[in-house]
Image 1 (cartoon, rainbow, N blue to C red):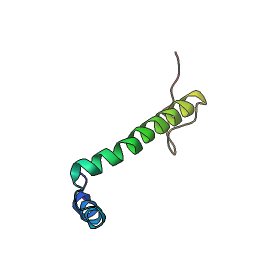
Image 2: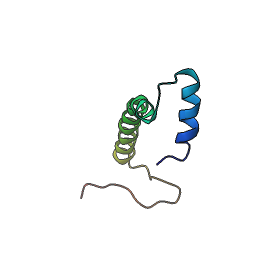
Image 3: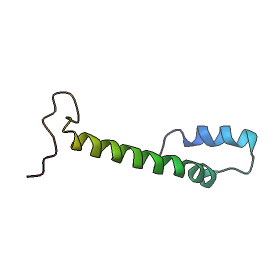
Image 4: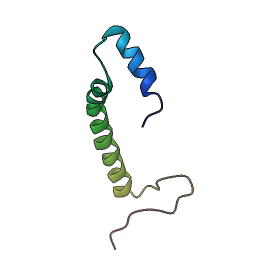
Length: 64
């Protein structure tokens, strides 16, 4: 579990006292899905252009 959940929830409850863990999770799901799509697209872009995935990295995706 994320270490700062209690801090974020207490900050949320200042403005909306009814908020809790479910509210925080439901608010963060669209951001998680967006990051998943964006980072997967970037990975495929790197593989397609045969760009190494890191510094001095020999791992590239080849279709052999």
